[in-house]
Image (cartoon, rainbow, N blue to C red; front, side):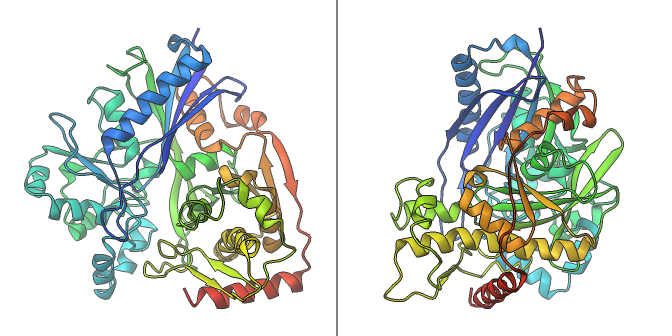
Length: 492
């Protein structure tokens, strides 16, 4: 009986695999971390072999630990860290270099050069994106320029580019299928947002041969079937793909224009469904494809902060201020206020709405009376302030006042952070019963393609609320806090 969906959530620091049933219950969950590599300041890399090993290991463990027969799997959904870029040899599947991670800033100078040449407006009009090292296009170019003979091999069609979804489908299908979905393709700086195809003028601008690129598909269809995958039988449909943030939007059942969610992970990402037509931001946000199902396309506005949960990890690993990430809530609760301390966690530059890759982190307002609790509280507040700036820009662009914001990701479990987020936004924060919405969204997309779920209405019925956080701050207090935050951001 094919009564389960397997979802692979391949993230920045680890791979999570979920087993989901027809009622959207997560029957089993397993995560395995893998190493991060930092060859130079501002450079971040992954070893694709270690990503694949973490994926197959986690699949094996979840099936064994849950006592789940692999023959019950009706389909496989994939969601992934989006802009992370790798290129491999088509003949043997061997990568030509480590994957360059979305956080990597090595192409900052090239982006600055294109901006100086007045190319940003041209790029944004076609892609909905800004010129920033965050996206895949400049990373691809860097690999072709710096790996010996790579450009020549790419022109000959001997190499394949992929974001992590593409790499996983390639590996799961035994090297047969070289595909991506529209949500991931929309993050490359190479796809035309309106035609949903690779744009010849953008390929020319970045000097990238089209022979290198995967086929762009919808977010819910059968792309191929498993072949030679450890722990899995051959022939399981690989049937859903979405970039992690779009998958979370889908997993939160944000199917109506105006629905929005924020995912608090390594970075934080706020997305609003804007419907069937793209809206170009005037406030430093991105316009992206949310998903495509059949012939129906949904677009989204997105604001991203490069550092969210990673700021807590820095307190844990860099400053040794806490032993485990969850300790930050109790430490922050040990003080009544932030003691005048503000932390701008620009540890990898500033994302939306500022887009300043050269910005650096700032802890402002330190005195002799400052202690660990103040810094912990300022860290959580800094994460929330970033989302507030993004949401204000989003409301301006969309001309819609948000009634509530759905939240997910690991840090959404932090009640102190969620309450402050509600206070500083002036908007209800709604946390679902299942906060693994990224993997759940991938499962939903995969299930739709194989008839496991009939439609979005059936999925909506399975979404359940856990807790709502209601704003307590007066508007005047909220405004005062935001003004102080904005003044500190200028110092980053």
